[in-house]
Length: 261
Image 1 (cartoon, rainbow, N blue to C red):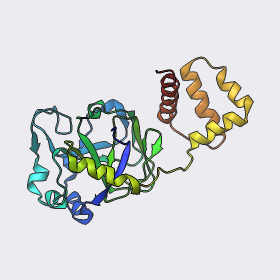
Image 2 (image 1 turned 135 degrees about the vertical axis):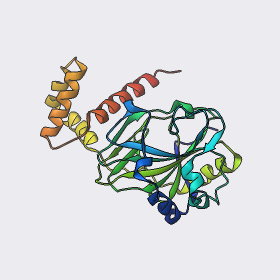
Image 3 (image 1 turned 60 degrees about the horizontal axis):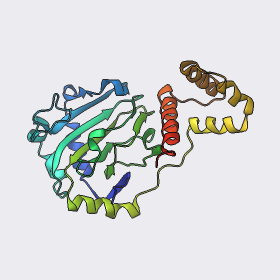
Image 4 (image 1 turned 90 degrees about the horizontal axis):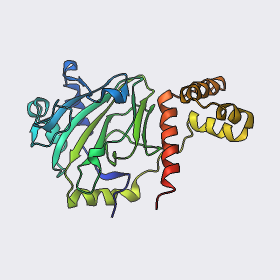
């Protein structure tokens, strides 16, 4: 049986204790994320557990997991997760600063039945943060524990004035964790159905033939992208270039997949 795209697990971590431990992290401990082509703004992290052979403490690896200084020096991290029987191979704090964007990408190392399972526990989760998975906005709240299949396309926009910080755990598959994912599905809230500015503009293209024709006449991709952003802004609809390009990629992928046998 294939895994779901997402599930809110029927368990919680000790959020007050996690926030205390987070507050004790020195500002100098945060390191820029290694996937520099995938983001704009501040996307940084602190490694709590990572592979011994990782190129950086935030990078993936295949060797035995090593407990890093923040985990070893502050027992509150272990205490907050003490009731979760997880085989953790990586634990990171990931911060997306105000105005930051994680561009759409896929984590192919999480693909396959034997791949690690990634859990997100939001610690600081401002309301104006959009986490998009497979084109759906995930309604994650602070203190909750979510499984996300990030081998699927995903991106994040922080439109807030404060940072978003998640505790991200990569865990080996186990019957207990698989059961928690299955148990969480019935109570998992539906993705946020709020229409985005890009979706409103797409509706305009259906109802305004002249607008649609003006864009269809453009053969150059850059010209098409620039003109789309301009026409949308003239109508009070603002979205990023990356958001538009992600929608174009998704549309192309959907078109291709309908012809697969």
